[in-house]
Amino acid sequence: MTPAAGTVTSPVRRDTLTRRAVDGPAAAPTDEGPRAGGVRAARGTPRPARWVAALASLAVVGSSAACAAGPQAATEPSGALVVVVGGRSNAAPPVLSGVAASARDLAVQQQSVFSLVVADGAPFTVEQAVPLTADATDAGARAEQYAANRARIDDAVTGARARTPESDLLAAIDLGVQTVGTPTGVRTLVVVDSGLATAGALDLTVPGMLDADPRQVADTLADFSQLPDLRGWSVVLQGLADTAPPQQPLDAARRTQLASIWTAVLQRSGATVVQRGDVRLVGVPDPALPAVRPVAVDPGMRCTGEVLTLTGGPLAFHPGEPTLLDEDTAAELLRPYAEQLIARPRLIAEVFGTSPAVGEPDVDRQVSEDRAQEVAHVLIDLGVPIPQLHVLGLGSDFAGRVPDRDATGHLLPAAAALNRTIRIDFTEPVECV
Image 1 (cartoon, rainbow, N blue to C red):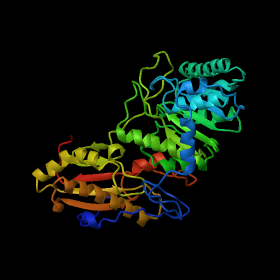
Image 2 (image 1 turned 120 degrees about the vertical axis):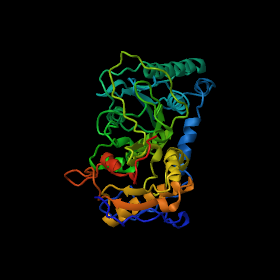
Image 3 (image 1 turned 30 degrees about the horizontal axis):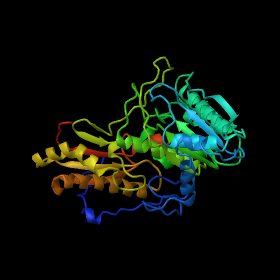
């Protein structure tokens, strides 16, 4: 819709801006507020005891020497280790390090079964339910068995190679856990990949998907029964967002967003713990590997001279909140436009918020206005006089809206992200920076 003259308003004072999550109707939970009846957990909430226990279990064998040394008797075999490896183009070569290496050592210590799956466009199994047996009665011989089992895992990881173009990481995870069934003991899934999947149910090449609300992504996959069954599994993500050319590197905001998407998906799948690896992967993959399409990394804003549109990335908002993910970065990106407004007192910026159709129209409109107010306050903090700023929330009623529900009424998270914007209309052309 084109706003009628006189419908825009000046920004309210920052200290009166309502900062709240907005409840959507129970039939259509949205990222614009908690699910029906939900109470949003405060940031800084202590981790549950099971998280702490799982982290402790991975730290028990923090070095390979811990597995091999000592005269203790061989333990009864238990648990499972599944490693899903990209081994593909556009991502750093796979290797286990840090927390992922500790997960390997724990599996060796408890003589788990081991499977490895390659996450290319048609995921396949390399190692399937191999028992990491170390049953020698002599401590020295048993130490040699532990070392051989560690080497077998490491060689399988570093030697993994994609056979088919693209990457269907979600299907590979599903295949991996199916290879071992439900053994007793600690079950750990280690994913060694950038996470930039390009095929299957979670395809990040779909426009808007990288900026989609993580919970909406997870809920939509669940609605269509496209999630693996990870109940009872702990997950370690090694190499997440670690890319190689021609894939464009991810900025800090996109790295965080990608981790949030995969964490939401894995938790929605039933994982008890999702932990990101503490060591980045580096290097260049073999150029002979099958091609993988790069995932486009939108700069988060586009400018025509008359209109500046904020689309996400470093200018995104916290899901369900009218607060920017990184106000300092947003301020730096908006500074050149603030300076032009300050230098041209007759120039007016009309700040419009838009929203996907995720709830009642009035709720969508209010959320979009709260976010427009937040951007207006960033400009005010940069020195723009309040009379030069007008604010209006359009909700989901605006020109150029992308259909964000399918024929059955299910929300399309990527399309919803494309509709979640802040649009700044200038009364005179500005210089795009």
